[in-house]
Length: 288
Image 1 (cartoon, rainbow, N blue to C red):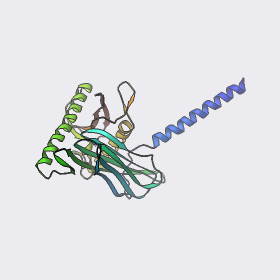
Image 2 (image 1 turned 120 degrees about the vertical axis):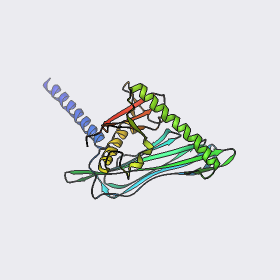
Image 3 (image 1 turned 135 degrees about the vertical axis):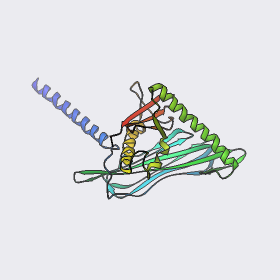
Image 4 (image 1 turned 135 degrees about the horizontal axis):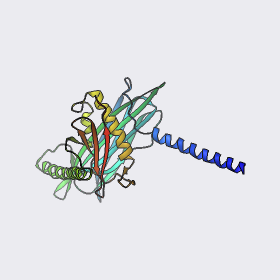
């Protein structure tokens, strides 16, 4: 009997140990904000969208995200989101890489109608030097409009060049704006939000890559953005936790809105799932 109890105890200990190791790996291989590395930097980082040509069923968009660090990092990861007319169409991201300096991601996306494509990527490197852990990060984006109509030849543009392009841009932008307004309205009703926020779509956060958030300096902005993407990865990219505790695929959700409290105390990330349910993520901002 004692031998059986001892054997069961050893089996349980083994199971617990395996669980702890696996759990540690999952936790370790995640975006975690560490102070910026003063020496490491990205030699290149890019998100690119291009019209790859028409097909019998529509047209194809080539979507790429890549980055090159000036040294090999302890951990490397890039993730990218592609929104079509304000709705998440696809996401890119591979297994975490150890001891690598470069990452390349690409995918062809099929579409059947005129649309706006917004892609935003987060490029991340975690660096270890003795007992010191630092990080390096970049945000890149691209945007493309594609017009497919029986009245005009298939073409794409980033900035409208003529009257027709301006009209298409206006129509599509209005559609996206409606999605964002509905997201904000649903979240305000669901979570009883106060309106003392400045609102930024996630796809516009690249603008703070080289200029600070209002009310914050450059170092504080980098920390806020790093922690923002940490939350986006864990609570959006990997799956959205519903209010009932289940996890939902983010595909089909609206562009997340970043609500920065005007008292600079916290930020909220809100989005609306495919079925209309609202999601919210709250992050505190340390006093500065």
